[in-house]
Image (cartoon, rainbow, N blue to C red; front, top):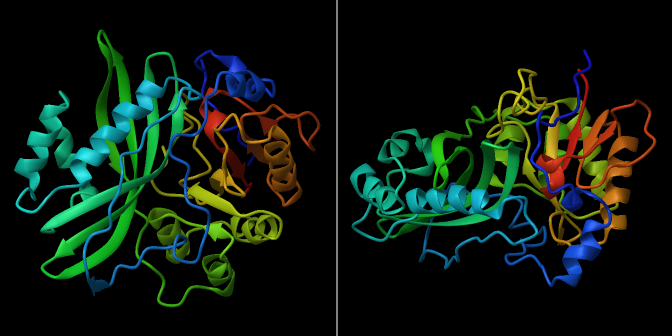
Length: 331
């Protein structure tokens, strides 16, 4: 069954951000990525859950840039995730998390929805890998906050992380968070199939914790497992979302999204260049999108509206996809 493109109805304006000319306009204004993500490396492609002796790594807060569609929306979502998911010694537990959330003037009831973002630990630090839109409309939004988290348990440090679908609504004074939907990848397979292992072992494919767990669960479409290594043969790419941590429906519609069914993945960084960064060559993004289609994707979305394609909706662009490339597959 063919579904429509992964975009929301009534997208927010600022179409200039979505067109190929936007890079030049914003670049002239001096907008660059304030927090460029790491290039894919073996250590960046996964997070170990095993405990090791040592200290917690140092992290810095994530900040959006003016190149974003409504950067204040992402800022609001990220500051909440950082507040819940990181704490100093003696500040663990839900009561302390509620105090941190209250300091942001956000509903403290959100802490009860934090799930894996608030594990039991003496101390924790969190680094946001990326914050991308799951959807952005005039009065509501979904921000997918992809993060890594390190926790200290006595003298042992454990690496983990998750992806949180943060829902927001426009209020009279700005944007407020209304709900949190952390990723739930499912249990890992005792022995991942060869196709899964091939992706997990590819050092040119960087996978955040939730995406890596999605692959280990075995609930990912064969098209995803085939296309990722094909693209990695040409590009180093940082995946943001595969299955879990993404809205169940295409934001703003009642159409099921391809992501929760394991039939899509998103890429936020190509060859070390963030898709949202105006300094990233549009030719690189365009070539990557066309190569994704050639690798079998029926539905490729990004910041550039490409012509051609095997079907009328094979390529699409909208406000939601100004910050990543969506690559979807049929059943």
